[in-house]
Length: 267
Image 1 (cartoon, rainbow, N blue to C red):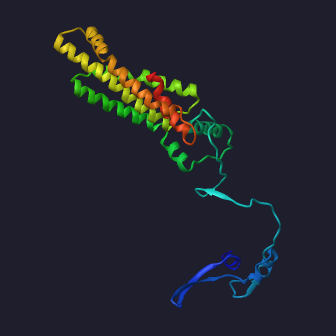
Image 2 (cartoon, helix red, strand yellow):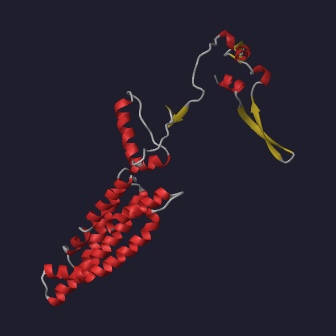
């Protein structure tokens, strides 16, 4: 088979330099001896005795149907499938659906593999959830060191889930996906909510330490004193998000997702 591969295809033998250039030398049969399938039976190969034997002496040919191209993935025969998630669904939802269908429908010995960005997303899985959890723990310890208490940071952190829940409700209502743009908007939202909660808690702590007020009185006084600054900040934030929510044209989906995920809670 190696001899036949050389005759029909080619093999690199050596190279030489002439006229200041390097030339490669390939060995193969002349075009007139490999132009038709029937020409294969006219080719010869040397046996163990040194005699030239035609391929027709031990080889027959027959026509058969087969694919024009065979694609492989990791040395396995494969078929490439490309698609996009339906409107309102994320790429993570599409990956999950493909895995479920493949598990139910593919016969034994068949499997699926991912390429490109989908490979990174499928291999990482829910890595973003763990990242958010680590960041939340880090923020908790920073607030605990600032207030010198392990309980006061919970007053700040517990104000975040309500706002995040509201952003997901708006995304669902607008038919937008929870993609990387939505997560960027959630990060901006968490920053605003955390700042507002820090302002209230900081003022309430000072009121309790200096004025000797009860916990309820300090919380009410802190909310009353910081109500106007919080409203001013929120309205300014809303005004900055209006162009994103009303965006159109190229990139409008990403802009609307970023703005919409943070706009709902501010409203």
